[in-house]
Image (cartoon, rainbow, N blue to C red):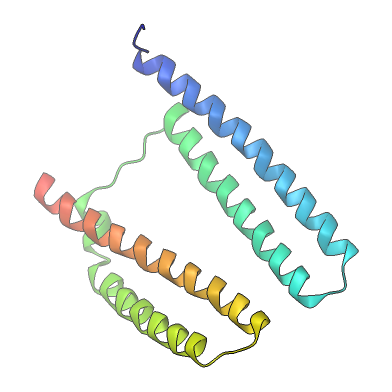
Length: 145
C-alpha cells in the first residue's frame, strides 16, 4: 500500500472535517425542530444542550480547517505562562465543583434529577480535563524553548 503524502493527508482531513460540519448542521436543524415541537422542559433543555454542543463543535472544526488551510495554530510559552495563576485557580474551582456535583448526585433519588446531574458532572469532568491539558501544554512549552 502506498503511503499518503502529508499534503494528501491534510486535504483528506479537511474534507472529513467539512463533511462532519455538515452533520453538525443537520444536528442543529434536528434539535431546533424538536425544540419547536415539544413543550416538555426536560426535552427542550436536552435539545438546547445538544444544539449548543453542535454549534461549538462546528466552530472548533472550522478552527482546525483554518489552521490547516490558512494559518497554523501556534502556542508559545508566553501564551499560557501569563495565564498560569488563573489557570490554577480555575482548576481548583473545577475540582471543588466536581466534589459538590458528586455530593448532589449522592443525595438525589429522582431519575430526572440524576439525569441532569449526570450531564453536569460529565461536562465538569470535561472542563477539568481540558484545563489539565492546558496546564500540561504550559509545562511542555516551557521545556521546548
